[in-house]
Length: 340
Image 1 (cartoon, rainbow, N blue to C red):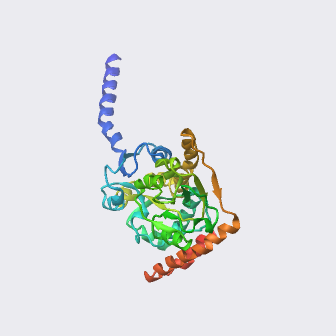
Image 2 (cartoon, rainbow, N blue to C red):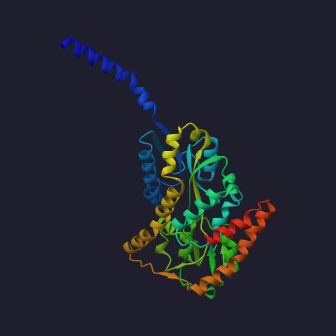
Image 3 (cartoon, rainbow, N blue to C red):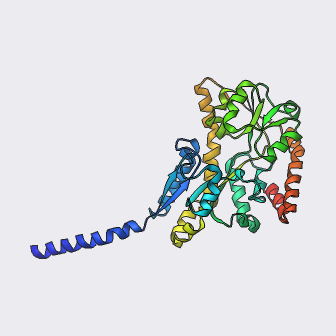
């Protein structure tokens, strides 16, 4: 009996040893590139929790290895990196590449009917999901998530803004053609300054204010150098979490479905809420720690309507650009977005 037991034990041990590499072979490691640091609020609140969701949904069949702080690819090269396979997954700030996704850019127009990043991300995913022309703009990658910022906040150094008359003549830092045009239409002076330099520019009065998301208010500590915060109908920025097509196609259908169960609409809303919306309360708490108080101003309904009406030339210019490119669905797309 002892001899049989010993032989059985040895057989099981050898069998387990032979099968062990096959167990490990079932785990696919995917490389994800992001320009953000590991300690960045977006990484803590959105990226890492989503990765945990993916790994749990796939029951460990997929592991995601993150390359933070541009260590695998520069932020401006992230789209190229995921297309070419340098990265398997990339978090892509789509604003880096004007003209790459001209129809998807509808989500960045001012005055759209969403107030939070979660709402904007839901709108963006639904537009993508039901618009073949938008899907075509992402044909070179597998889109996992599309998310937005909240509509940019107006922060000002000395003077509070609650009407169009208040902003006239102010020097406002802008990013992108839509916000630049909107600032001009509102009677203010657009100024282009790299994001890392805006703290000093505000501190020294080079600019009177800027359009920015709460995530940047916290990350760049703008609460130390501005006094006023007004929620206005500026546009939002949008981002993708995209996967290399070859890497995606190597996964079995069950694994693909598991990844999309925490991506798609649900994942887009999750990223919007946790990447951007969560930064509002964090900013208020961070400001309080250094003795600063954040009071959030808002426009009256009538005043908001004035801002939106003055911003409509931005919509017209977007439509004009798309018509030149032959994008016949642009007008219907804008109408759909406004009616959502």
